[in-house]
Structure formats: structure tokens, C-alpha cells
Length: 315
Image (cartoon, rainbow, N blue to C red):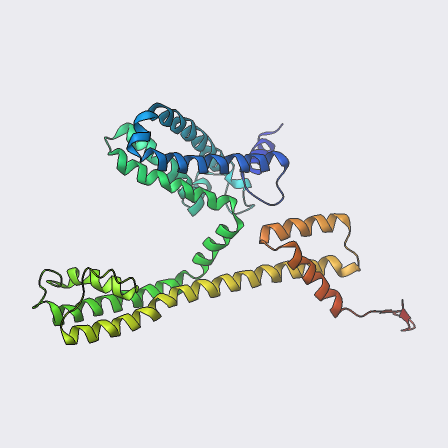
């Protein structure tokens, strides 16, 4: 087996995709189980009584998990030129580009705390917090999570604009309540940074109630900020919802285009059906949606074909 072929086989084995072989699907399932087990172990380890009783078992399981995750990470870096054709070069520069991608950074964050603890004295509680980030590795094995990350990426400018407006409103709210309340409640509104806690809780409509305005003008101002906050919270949610809708529409459009291409000769053969099914799973389209798209396309086609010579209907 050639070196290039070996690397391609490794890439196909560890990379999640709809066209995966049975061995690749088993690998995906095993990694998902290991990630979930890691998250469960980290949560249980935070319980003092359980941690004291099973400390050695937790440690052995941690070493085993880190070994698997490290091997997986190194194999992904090595085989990245075959993950997406043409996106990463078979060179140090290409692999460095892959290592800076979001999925690779998530993989690195899953193993980095363990190795840092070997070289630096660290608080174990601090270490546990970062180990929980391993749950983000599940984004590799979920089409829905992949779509969510794609929506965040494509709508990043819109999210930046929304949160910029939110930051401006937050500073305005904190400054306003400071002017109105700092004399009567210096412990709660003694400065604009201190007032930001109230502004944040009010703008997000959480309203913990531990800090509230007591002056008439402060109450009126607080009511206005609450109303404004309802709209501010809805803004990012609206962007996310519209982004999801646009992504789903785009996925259906891609599948419909491939469906029409496969029906160009009037028949979908076994090979075309296989590719359509793989594409459907990659795009997160259900079988029912695929059947509806096929039915809608068939309804748009003429019931009879005409002879190109005599223009008579061919049944």
C-alpha cells in the first residue's frame, strides 16, 4: 500500500461523513461514546465523595482518553490534505492552516489541559473546567451542530453588529442608572462599572432582583431599559433563526439541483440513487423531504414526451 493511499484511508476512517464505510461509522460511534463518557466522568469527579472513592479509576480513564484523543488529533493533522481536497496543502503550511481551523482547535483544547498539568502546577478544579470543553468535539459527529457553526460563521458580521449595538445600549443603561441612583444607593450604583451588573440583568430580561432602582426616575428609566432589552434579546435570536432558515433552504436547493441533474435522462439508476442518498444525509434532509422534492419535480414535468421529428405525444 502506497503512502498516499494509506493517508487517504486514515482520513476516510477518522473523518465523519455520510459516505463512510462500516468501519468508519463504528469509529465515529466509538468516539461519540468516549466523548460522552468523558463528560460524564468529569461531572462525577466534581462530586467530592465520588472523586475520593474512585480517584484512581478516574485517572486511568483520563490517561486512556487522552491517549486516544492525542492519536486522533495527530492523525487528523497528518491526513488533513485528504480531508477536503485542495483546501489544505500537503506541507507544513497546509497543516498549520488546518491546526488553526475551529474543529482542530477544539480537538487541541480537549487534550491541552492534561499536558499543561504535567509541566505546570495547576489547580485541578481549574483543569476540570477546561476538560469539559471536550463536549464540543461532538460537533464533528452532528449535522445539526455543523450547520449551527456554519450559520455562526456566515452570519458573523450580523452578530457582530447586533452585539455592538447591545454593548452601546449596555453602557448607556449603566451610565443612566448611575446618574439617577448613585447618591441613594452608593453600594449598588457607586460607579458605572458597578451599575453594569444591573444593566446586564435588566437588558437580558433576567432581572435577578438583587439590585433595583428605588427613586421614581430610576424606576421609570429601569422600565424603559426593560422594554428595550426585550427587543435587544430578540435581535440575535432573529438572526440565528433566519440564518438557520436560509441554510436549510440552501441545502434543499443543492439537493433539488442534484435531483434534477439525476433525472435528466428520466430515470434514477442505482448509482445515482446511492449518491442522492449520501447527499441527503450530508445535508441533513429527511427521507420524507426528499420524497416531497421528487414528487414536486415530477408534477412540474409534462405527462407526455413529444417526438422531436413528428411532434406527436409519446406515451
